[in-house]
Length: 293
Image: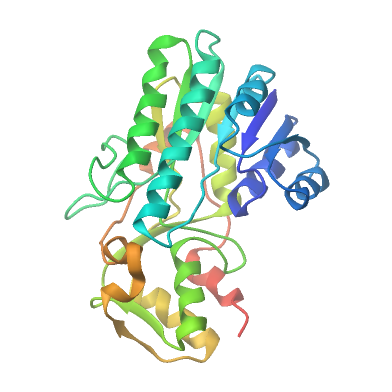
């Protein structure tokens, strides 16, 4: 299958490109810089130069592909306005990709986050959030899934709060970065809130399975660890960095404070049973042992 991918040079995208090529697919990756292009080519992908905001480029990439995987996002959480701009940019990009595939029955695999449900682990059947700072992303994904009625085999792989590899990535990676900067391995509240996690290479397998097999309009959970307590995550970070571990005010995490403080475990039982997905790589707490002091 000829696959067009956005976000193919990030932590997750790099793993997805490698997984696709190993499975015999050919990959064209969107690249907005010479460095990203070189990274994609080194991985064995062809390059289509452009940014997520270049809608004509996205359309051309989707037109020439047998399937599309969308992963790109600005990941600018520096302010509410910056986050809103990123959400709007992604909405326009995903709408363009989806519209290009209408009537083709080709797959469009997009990315979402596992939802938060009070008192229990969320499942693939639960709806995405319609309120909060990233609710706009949920609306974009829902519109993409609705294209199932218009001849697009759309699906969504929902990622947990931490997608990790060699101790890097996701919310745990952000906690590590903050700890290095502040000198404290901090966590909000009492740290009992749980974050789900998955290794990037396990997530990559699920993106491939969704591309190849997922029915139109379906959602899947790339969850290996149902929920690690944030204080346990911070404890490993603190030990690896030689820093104190303690509760800090939620406000110190800025825009992400309310999300960091939320208990948000998630299950992947349906995904495993239906698509045969089985994580095999290290858990989050084990992988954090790779953090360099």
